[in-house]
Image (cartoon, rainbow, N blue to C red; front, side, top):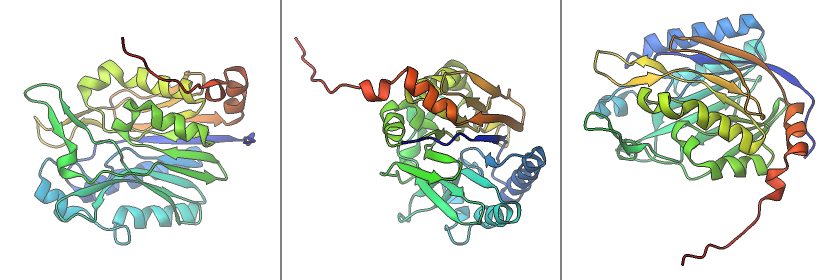
Length: 282
């Protein structure tokens, strides 16, 4: 597939969402407008932009529908008014299940329309320590369909956080024509220190795509609550970190040049060289 020779200024929003929906919306909209003032044409927010809570009853109560969610309404208006693309990294949303929510990534185009919605496939079910146990599948309905959005700013593959540990998803998106893959996240501080950068750079190199990874950061609410790693990052197909934030809230901005995707793939055609094979165990 021919790639567009187009440079795009993109900004990642790094924020600290809590259980306070109004506070989170104010922070989100403020950072959208700041990114716009930089001239960014593609702005992305992190996973669970709308709220973070460990209280599942509260989660079910706050979660809204695609048609009524205030973050989606405000973002549609913002995109239409300013002719920009925005990826709401993910929202905690109502699902078909009455006992579970959905973790949905929403791409909105410059006409203020939803271009693509992706529901997180891989649930974060891990046991890091006695104090850090996560069972996302207990509270969220997992998705079952990978999504690639073909747009005027390139082909965008949508993923969310824990998906990053499953490289076959990224290879399939790249093989289907992705130029950009988004990884909005709320990575734990413990795993972030160990694996965040190496995972993002690996996915970029394996796919020949730009990786855009906006992140949650800090302690989400009261002391002792969940803590996220931050370090939002923009990575080129060569694995070069074009920009990265630390642990403070803010914006991570860089220009991406989509022609680099075809340049990389012409020199390292690993997607074309992939072989099917059997496994023998002796």
